[in-house]
Image (tube, rainbow, N blue to C red):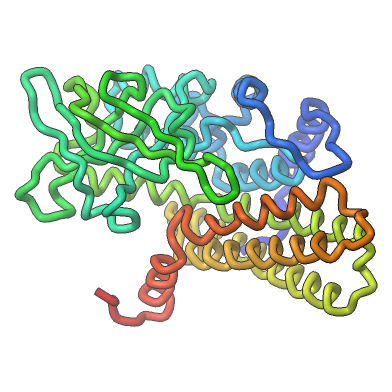
Length: 383
């Protein structure tokens, strides 16, 4: 595991920092504000035009063929600079690599350029109300027709579904086959008849996730990704790329949030409070532990091509640490009897509510603890 950049990586980081300074608006003095959708799409297109989308994709598919560490550098520097995620983050980091491995020539020719440019935005249709972390229990049915497939079912917790043009869908095509062997992946047109997207409003008021209801949706023959009945293998490829360098992004986001917490402590005059100082110091120590765990995960990814259990440890501890950070931020603004908090009061109230989803999204804490128990500690399977 290396903790510093090679000469080439350092040059890439410096060029990226300069590019971000030249293209991002000046940071606001107060709490961050979400980017409007049109500006987010334009930013994503700008990233593609500058060659900062698909950094690890093979050159023959429009990428730059760089090792994963370059994607990690991009994620880290972009987050620290205050840049938003690419609007097609699922397409770039999950669906694209899956199509590169399993897609047909026609699928690659149409979808890969569209993903890189941001013209084709993807969401993921894996989880269901009765099959969240247990994808082998998927109930969405795809039945054979004369011209393709007819799909009926329900997906839930789908990020970017309200913006998406397409969905990588997991459905059951062989109802009598063993759970893992009866699944097939498809490319779904989100504007096809029978597709309904229902945003899910969280306690924070956000609608980051959606429910996708499929009622007799007709899919053409060429919509299948991989072989019939091999959807489990395809899905595992998609999920392995979900972990990828995401831990570096999470750590960078946590560093930015810690900076906001420290600014809030200064604003409300709490920096002399020894209990506050101890808790901020504890959060800083946790952040450093997560940062080095992210480097370990990246080293494992570079060695074997697949993320190891470090990514599960990192996501689990990140969610807990971020929730603690948001609770402290809320306590600081609630204790601000002099009224100095200003906009930070609303920010930390919303952040604390939104953080409740951290231990659910991207793998529930219960599932992640099981992965750590089995793959790290060597304990027997719990079921």
